[in-house]
Amino acid sequence: MRLTRYFLPVLKETPAEAKIVSHRLMLRAGMIRQASAGIYSWLPLGYKVLRKIEAIVHQEQQRAGAIPVLMPTIQSADLWRRSGRYEAYGPEMLRITDRHGREMLYGPTNEEQITEMFQAYCGSWRDLPKNLYHIQWKFRDEVRPRFGIMRGREFLMKDAYSFDLDREGATRSYNQMLVAYLRTFERLGLKAVPMRAESGPIGGDLAHEFLILAETGESEVFLDRDLVELSLGERAIDYDDAAQLQEIFDQWTGSYARTDDTHDQALFEAQVPEARRVTARGIEVGHIFYFGTKYSEPLGATVTTREGDKVAVHSGSYGIGVSRLVGAIIEASHDDKGIVWPESVTPFQAGLVNLKQGDAATDAACEALYGKLAAAGLEVLYDDRDVRAGAKFATMELIGLPWRLTVGPRGLKSGTVELTARRGGATEELSPEAAVARLAQIYRGL
RNA sequence: CGGGGCGUAGCGCAGCCUGGUAGCGCAUCGGUUUUGGGAACCGAAGGCCGCCGGUUCGAAUCCGGCCGCCCCGACCA
Image 1 (spheres, rainbow, N blue to C red):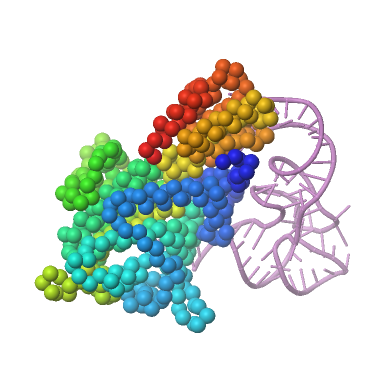
Image 2 (tube, rainbow, N blue to C red):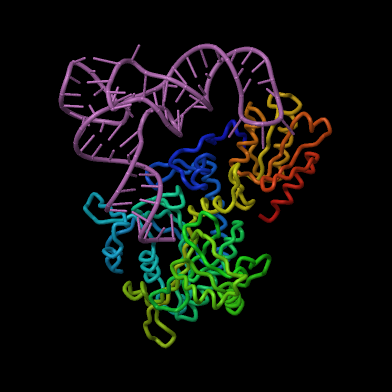
């Protein structure tokens, strides 16, 4: 993409309303534009990142066996009355009346819909297990939206819903999602830790929140340092292998990790040696929850067992705040010059800076390099504006592209261009061909 | 929902107290000189001063009402 043809309204000054770093940087980098309180338009750069995150979430969900669907944003109040939540939900739910006077709502979540859909088609133990998910916009009329996209009223969320015959099956489904989440967050370049959440209506321990550690996090977290070091890495995972899933579950949830909501200082001190106790701040980016028959019973989601009995299915729900992740990644990865994108979600894989726009030799070298990068399958933002070098560098750093190729008359005399890492700033001089090869290698497999 | 604050050019702000031709910086447009870290100079364009009403010869400014937005707290993905 040539910058002169793109739509990238970057701001040199920080808009007054933005207080936290991700909000400031998203506005300055031209990623979002506020439409009203807690509601944002996604500008091209922000939209690209959002879509990349969404794609990774999709891939990892499906890899774990979840099946994608898409349910509507507008739901009928009747459905919610049947689960008893229409009244219970309160003013956070945006209620709408259509032209016929029918009561509707803009969905804050989809448990009712998915359960209704399930029970309409699945009546036998043979239909189980199932895990259906979608990635859809939701609306919660927060009293006080803030922090830009991190706590908007409209937000993009992945929610998955599992259906199993019994607690044992539900546990396997739960573990599949836990492992899928670990993989997802690792791919997004995040250090996310599952923390024990408030136990569900059934009790037990199958409820975890995933928090990423960031100084600006909204909640205080207490955890064992060993958890921070854990990584799935290249480990091969068989999502059909319940024993392996359980082993990973045990490994990741065996140590103390809680938010201030559930923190127990005495237990913390008893379980974690002083040297390994970490107190930090975290941002919640996902939660997984086993809720037994809470929704299946009132909504009549039952199956017939092998023995011919009708039983309510055991279900779980699993959310990831997709739009929130854009902000969360920035909170976890930035410096005083701007954003530092992980390679997996960067809006462009590299930036190309022409230091002397209008100079025939430099222009030609940039065009040639731009063509080679495209041919290698790389997404490149070519800054072909007629502005000074400093302005181009500042823009590239602000928008956070992980790699910058710099082309100027000085290097071209010796046949080289510069490749600079956004993180750390290390620069190496390479031939254009070698630079393309380096980038292609960096992005192989991502 | 309690407390506080702000709405003036695309963005950041001054002007309001003490009523009298609407300003500054950045960005934008034209020109000249520049050109490896957000250039300098000259010129230009851009405003229902949030909205409605009141007071006044005259309102961005004073008064009343409304709307919008932000911050702290409680609450939340």
